[in-house]
Structure formats: structure tokens, C-alpha cells
Length: 88
Image 1 (tube, rainbow, N blue to C red):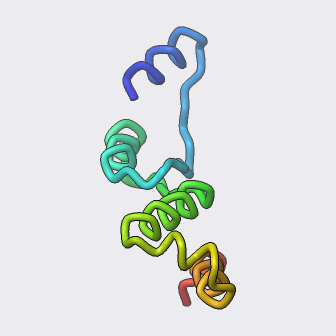
Image 2 (tube, rainbow, N blue to C red):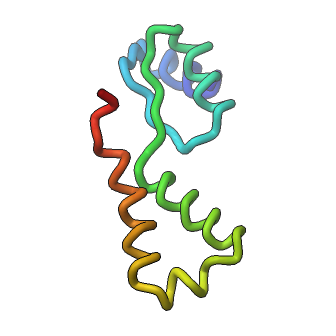
């Protein structure tokens, strides 16, 4: 993060983001709060969420089932949809 801060200073910009979107690395989100303050909202990007789901499916040995079972594949796709459901 300090490299980003240095480059912004060099270019004469003062970054003041409200939202910081990253992959799902907790350390990166913590670093963003450290640099930009606790008021910043951090979140993970949808692409990385779906990639993490696919890695978990593979890790659990379910890749063949995912490829061959339409209802299982549909269920896994519905998990992605949860990202769009309001928390309330």
C-alpha cells in the first residue's frame, strides 16, 4: 500500500476512497483500512468469489460431480447468487 501512496503523492493526488474492492485476502483488506482509515468499506470482488468457490469444489473432490450433475451445478451456481441478496 505504501507504494500506491508514494505514487499518488508523486502524481499530486490524495487518494480518499470510500470503497476498496479486493480479492478475499483479509490482510489486504486490513492494509486498506490501515492506510485509508477505518471508515473505508472493504469488499471482495464477485470474480474472486466464484473462483474461490470453484477451488473449494475441486478441493473437496467434487469437480467431476460438478461437471456431470446438472442439479449439483445449479445448486453451486445459486451460491453465487447469494452475493446479490440484500443482507436484511
